[in-house]
Length: 117
Image (cartoon, rainbow, N blue to C red):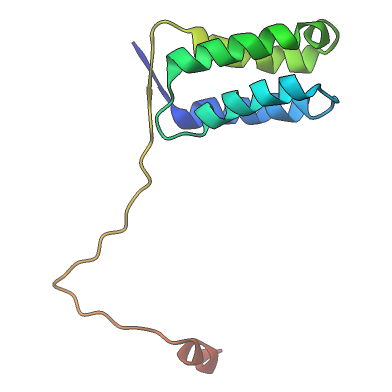
């Protein structure tokens, strides 16, 4: 099983979105795009919902895919991520800087910083 982070989805989606921006789309396509984007930018991606939403979007833009190689490239990359049966997604946690309770803390004010410069 391949583990794919939600950030991997976002990276491919951003390239796909940049290609989508070059066109004027009907409102229905923009709604489908919004559903895909909302799911991709959630912390835990609902793959089954994303498959349905992306499938609708993909079929709505299929005519543009025939003419635009870049849009087709990123649409296919996103399609591969969404429809890969062996993919498990996870949310990469941000690194936390822990504070050592044993060390004393010093608060720095803005005026202290200005005095040093």
